[in-house]
Image (cartoon, rainbow, N blue to C red):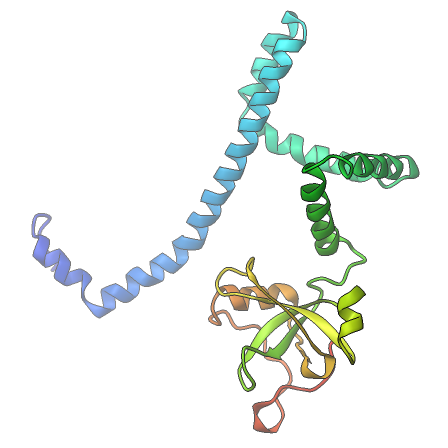
Length: 240
């Protein structure tokens, strides 16, 4: 029988039961991802609503007084900022798909690139975003295995390209640039430049590899080709 509501020691002993602890942990694993997802979405929506409210207040001070009631009604619609942001991104993508839009983007980039302080931030962010999200880029297009931090110790990495410029001139042979993420936070990691022959392709997708890394190896991807003798993965080369 379950302990009485006021029996604290009885409830503590019940929680300490291995079967009860197993059920509690299972429930936690079910609810934790959902709770974190809801928390992140609420914070994102809240931040967007704050920016949208500030824009509405600014518009109310500039536009005629007859429009203020309408703007106030817009401000009170929950989640409207998310719809506006998605619509703005869609319209921007459509606009820059033609020659006139590309010319405007080029001119705006040139302006930002000539402003002190802003130049360093804008240029760096643009280069990273172009590398990560451009359809013609190679960043995070392939998951591979590499020996790190010592021979015989394997980790998952992502091919980001090949060494270029002065770095490529100083390094002999055919090398690839890898990003080795940390666990469970893949947004930090290490950049490695290793010989192509030391990199081994994986059949898993980038999304599956990220899940494997974030879960600390718990969420295993589908089984790929059987490793060769000695536990060494297949020696097929990574594509740049």
